[in-house]
Image (tube, rainbow, N blue to C red):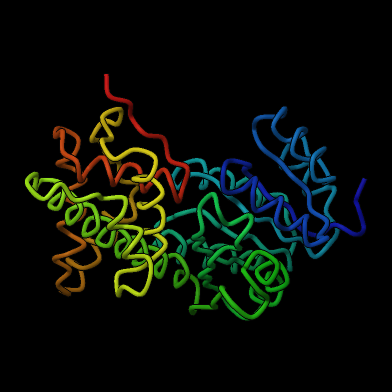
Length: 308
């Protein structure tokens, strides 16, 4: 049965999707939930008093028109196949949002296909990691005016404030493009912090307290940042990092950023070298890579590899 008060559904209830659902519910927005893990769907729906869906078709049937379906799925095949299923279920005027880290070129293509079928399509780059639930998310979105009109109330609820923390970056693809560059910059900032602190640690004769240094830098320094906050918290708990393996995965956006710089002929040596350092970490046992791994865990809840 259609719920006449619920227009919005989230597909994919992992770390990001689940917390985004919780934030929307905390703003008294009625939502529907679907994940391939039925137990996860039921558990979260019970927690936040949301509508449950047993399938994509079930979700579409339960949502009132006009519908907004926000996908938080891994980039690639699963997003592509889910989008194909949705296009067979939705009607003109409904809106699909891809809130995961898809390649912006895929977003441009998908938006054109959706528009030809009468759907609105929005690509949304989302930053904030596991802390977005409490602090709000930084949202970079792309799409036409119709897509923006349909999604804006939810963007305002997800962001730190209704008028802060979200941006209509431009047409379809602009949101994921901006988020891609954001993540490339993130790679470079993380690498600089990790390398600098590794250099301080290596100066054994000074015996400098890294936890004290990072705490100091948080106050008044030009390098103060959330990444520095996370690093300071890590070092307060453990400066040796002996239990951490120096293995830093890359989730794709850094590679896409470097590829884009090559295609445009725009030099990005810092971001490129930061990506290369992640590749190098897969065979190295160095302190900087351990710090990078802990930073990723701090902001995104990413798994770390324990030293054997």
